[in-house]
Image 1 (cartoon, rainbow, N blue to C red):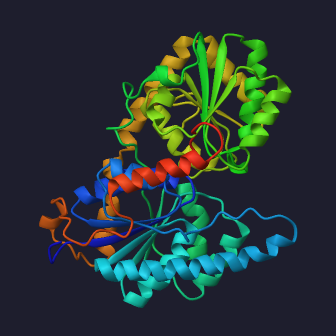
Image 2 (image 1 turned 90 degrees about the vertical axis):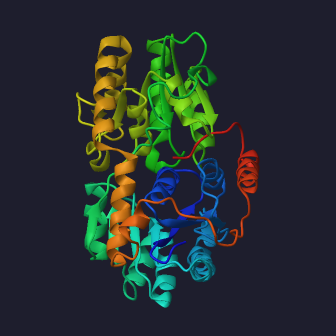
Length: 427
């Protein structure tokens, strides 16, 4: 690393693989191309490590204590705050150690746990920190810990992936903020990317797809009810549900109870471009979103989308132009919108074409990374020179504790193999 080159620590809690993790996997290589020397600190999950390795990021640290996703019942709920505090203390110490080793001069932290773990380390080392907010929901524990942390520390800047996210967090955090839209990597998601035969049910005239983390926020059971209705109304239509999470077993049981024999649960899908290509219509029935990556990716692969009328998604999808919209939880309206697309290939083609054009014009991953790099430069007072910003960084530091790309891929494969069922993606 040259004397004028910016060294950034990118802190990404990652239990599974969701929207924030997708943006990290997209942005980290592009930030490196902007001349920023980036170290990723990722955990407790390992799915992201494998993807980073595939994209050429070999400077990473696995943080197994990061943000444990705690599902507790009964009296065991009383232990949750203590377990979060234990996790926070260990994670903050690790982040400080890595920042010293890498001589970091700025931190970029995603998600509430990443904020409260990285900020004390940044303040202790006297370097600025930027928070990235990517959703509009927080757990009670996260909210309590965030308010407690804000009494002591605040970030130097807040980056939000949509105006909806900014409206939620800027009043709470009370620091300078800017919207930097999520971007789609045009090298990975195009109308020609992927292999539709990998996941497309044979013989289906139309395939309706869903990809999300199987959690309450994503409302997977709405998609199950949709599939059951479509099975009776359109016998030649198939449905695919991708993703893992706490509600997967419930969703599968409900599908059996409703007789949704046309619905296939595929679990974690590593090759998302092939999933989108296998579908003719993509559905996301979430109750809240920041700037949903699956919707952007489906649009980039020229697929018409049907989405809920929630603030973050409304900034991406314009009803009747780039996609179709329905009210949260209204399965009747969801069925009606999907039926319109099933019955009209012309409508599918028109909306998909408009969606592709919008993503290419307004949701570029390169533009997102370039603006993020500018903000990191700004909060450090322009530590890196203009020359350094145009140069790919050298890898002259010691190897990260996690080791090689092969180890990252092996760790990711091992974590997925321990999950139940076939592979699926939590988004």
